[in-house]
Structures are given as structure tokens and as C-alpha cells.
Image 1 (tube, rainbow, N blue to C red):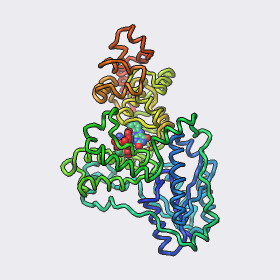
Image 2 (image 1 turned 180 degrees about the vertical axis):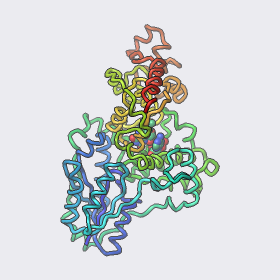
Image 3 (image 1 turned 120 degrees about the vertical axis):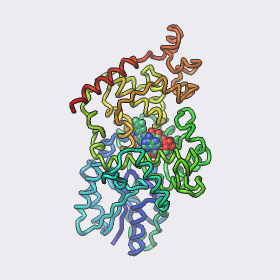
Image 4 (image 1 turned 30 degrees about the vertical axis):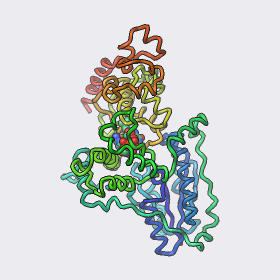
Length: 488
Ligand code: FAD
């Protein structure tokens, strides 16, 4: 009999991979060979809107993992099917053909993925034992409860409870080792599985220009080693100043680890173990127990943990609906020109345009800008927030359903891109970097050139005037939300 681990798009690593470690232990104990599989389905990627950058990043990570596993005499087999409903039959056929008796995988918490796994468990019957593991978070989603016995949804109490649990049980941050080596005998037995080729990206997942691929690859080198290096650099060079500088996009002072977390190339436990070391070995990440940078960074990780709990507690959020269902009743506009300008970074609001241009150049956008461009889209342009959410999926390298849907959750707060820029990019450096038309604009005019420069001076820039009036459209959004949501 044989043991298998089924990799999913969120656990692309062999270090500290909960299900893989379980499979490896089982294989060792029962003296059985271990096989790894990955199911590639272009239709699944298109369904989620996965960007070319993310597809390339993940396939590159898989190539590196295949080589690492090969050194351990473990094959990584790529299975392929065209349609989403072919995934379970395809995996099942392979497992049966190979005589696999046990298969392990890590949970994915979205509704379709849970349905796939339910079907998988049902179809495995008595022949194959399936074990599913929680791996994406330190605290299992759905387990942090309110006094009333329902999963917590509010950040502050969740954060408080999370911090005291980890302080009490620091072993929750312990990591597990990479899988043990298959014996030479097992390698021989599995020899027909070692020539599996990493799949090619679907046609709609190719970069439109080769130079885009080169640039994205140099910004986001794939693999666990690259992720560890980035974590080390962050801890040594940026962590101390994180609390003070994290909101300033010009400083680039955040970890840029999101793409590695969302595809699982780095485990959250491994990252927090690194932070614990920087915290003199203490797992007390509270305001009192940790330096401001550490406290503040771990707080962001706790947002990530809560958002996975939200996906579990409010499953409709992975079915294209907002957490607050009232927002589904808002009558959205169809401002075609506004949409094109938002995408193109030519809205005439420098902070918004800078953010969108960073997104296209890097497959990434600073968090402060994500907050601003989303608010501008569904409040000032009054376009359906789901269009922006989908556009992020199609362009970001770090797309993550839980973080993205929660980031795009509509609210009544309308961000003012001028005062936001003045506060968070006080020197205007970020704007000048990404909007070259404004690179020579001096002083505060850079935040609102149309309003703050003379007519002639503005016209010379070749930069558009604002597509909408911010004040008027703020008012329109607040009134629309109020009237469309009042009877729901
Ligand atoms: P750091 O500041 O170094 O933070 C460390 C880690 O904490 C991040 O890697 C991330 O995993 C987590 N984190 C940080 N900020 C948040 C947050 N606001 N919510 C949840 N987790 C957070 N994040 C994604 O990973 N994928 C997405 O698709 C995504 N879409 C977003 C859409 C919108 C509209 C908004 C407002 C936010 C979105 N975020 C998303 C959250 C956040 O912007 C990114 O995680 C962050 O910018 C990544 O940069 P970093 O790794 O340098 O973060």
C-alpha cells in the first residue's frame, strides 16, 4: 500500500506542511512509499480569475518543490483535467491505479473547495482513508468563540483572545520538518512517476509581454528559500520601524510576504517563529510584551487569521456576496469611462492613479492604496465593488479570497484621496514615482494638481483632470447606500 499527499494552491511547500508531515509520518511508520500529487485545472484558475503573475509564481514554486522532493526519492505527480468537476474523478482514478490506501491534504475553506473535498471523501469509500488538516492559520478557523457560542467576527476581541492563547500555548507556533526520504526500494517501485512535467499555464494566463514576466519574477522569486530570505531581511532591516512607517507607501517598509503566504510557500508558523526569536524568544505579542514593530506586524497576521474564520463563519462571502448582505441591494452605476480610467490609472486623482499603476507594474499594491482605490471605485464611481474585487484577483500576485473579499467589504467610510495622500505620502514621493507626469510638480500641488495649479501650468502636465467631483460623489454614495439598504 502507498501513502499520498495532495498539494493544493495554498500549501506549496514541503517545510512545515501539516498534511504532508502527517502523510510522511504514516508512510514511515507503515514502511510505505510516499507520493505527492498536484492537480492542475486551467478552468479552476479561470474561474477564480488567477492572474498570469500568480500562475507563473505558483508553477515556478511547484517546479522547485518537484526538484526538492526528488532528492528525497519522492515523486511529485502533476495530474491534469480540463473542467472543475473533473478534479475529483481524476485524482481518484490516479490513487486507485497506484494502489494508494491513505491520502492527506490541507483544508481550503471556500465553499466550492469544501464541496470538492466532501465529494472526494464520499467517493473514497472504504478503499482509501482521507485525512484533512488545518494548516493555513495558527488558530483553527471556527474555533475562537464568543460567550454566546458563535464564531467571533469582530477584530478587537478576536485579537485579544488570539494573543492570550498564543502566549499561553507558544507550542502552537512549533513547525514540523520536511518529509523523510523514501527508501531506495520505494524509489524503484515508484520509478514510473518521476518524469511528470510541470503543467503549462493556460492561454489566458500568459504574460502579454516577456519583459513583464522578467520584471515580476525578479520582484517575486518563487520558493521557500526566497520566502525565508525575505522574512530574514524584513526582521533584520524593517521590523523595528514597521509600526511607524507601515502606512507610508513610499517607504516600502512592509514585509511583502503576502504572495508567499497566500500560496503557502511560507507557513505562518515559520514566519511567527522568526518573529518570536526577534521578540527574545517570547510568544507574548501584546502591546506590553513586544516592541511596537512586532506588536503591529503580528496584529496584521491576526487580521489574516480572522478573515479565514470569517470565510468559514459566513460562507456566502466566498460566493460573491458581501458579509453585510444589505450591500447586495445597492443599485450600482455603470460608468464605463470611470471604470476604464480606474483600471488605467487616469482618474485624475494622483493617489488613486499611483496605486493602480503600481498594481500593473508589480502585481502588488500597498495596503493603504488598496483601501483607497477600493473606496474610490464603489463610493465615488459607485461601481459594484465585486468588479474591483475580481479585477484584483486578475492582477494581484498575492490574491487570497479571504483577505480580498474582506478588504473589498463595502462600508460607509469614503476615503478622501487627497487628505489620505497628504497624511500617508507626505512628501508626495510615492505619487511622483508612479505618476511620472507629476514628477516635477513641487510641494502640495502634487496631491491635487488640477485644483492647486494654474490652468496653463496644469494643462502642460498632460495629466487628466478629476473624472468625478469627490465631494458630490461622496454625498451621492452615502444617499444611495442609505436609500437602497433601508428596507432590506
Ligand atoms: P505586511 O504589512 O508585511 O503584513 C504581513 C502579512 O499580514 C501580509 O503578508 C498579509 O498576509 C497579512 N495582512 C496584512 N494586512 C492585512 C489586511 N489588511 N488584511 C488581512 N491580512 C493582512 N491581502 C492578500 O494577501 N491578498 C489579497 O488579495 C488582498 N486583497 C486586498 C484587497 C483590499 C481592497 C484591501 C484593502 C486589502 C487586501 N489585502 C490582501 C490585505 C493587504 O493589503 C495585503 O495583505 C498587504 O498589503 C500585503 O503586503 P505585505 O505582505 O507587505 O504586508
